[in-house]
Image 1: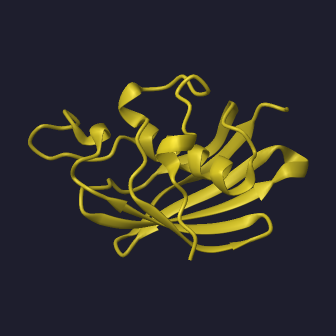
Image 2: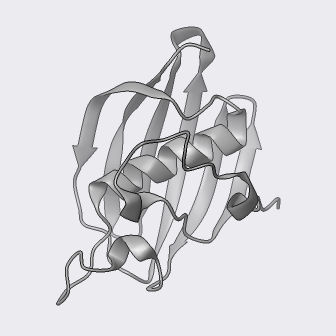
Image 3: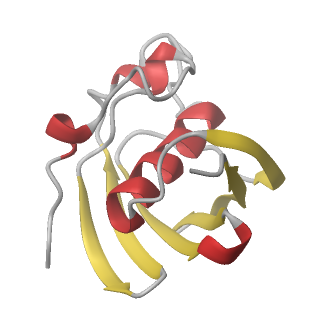
Amino acid sequence: MAVFDHKETYDPAVCVQDPRATDLPPFKIVASEGSHAVMSLDVVPELTCLRGHFPDKPIVPGIALLDWAVQLADQAFGCGRAVAGTRNLKFKKVVEPQTLLELTLEYQPERGRVKFTIASAFGEHASGIVELVPA
């Protein structure tokens, strides 16, 4: 099972987004073949995106989930992080600290997009399509 060292490859200048959404949770590649990848993400309480969102009951902001999908798609497929837009974006369940997530990615290079689903033992948390800026 491969593990990426995301701290050396993330370039905050590539994405302009909520600054709380820049750190990735610890993750591992569960499966990767061609244009499909599955990764496990461990939502540890130390993630900066949890600070202040919300003080009494921290949850992962939706922008962080989207950002994780984009960053990890780039890690897996080298598709870049420049987002042109999103389609069918859905946030169905909140993600709390100490949740183990499964991120499923499908890269569609001919269409310039990545489909993603984020789920856990509690069900599906988020899904959507990220349209990428053409290289």
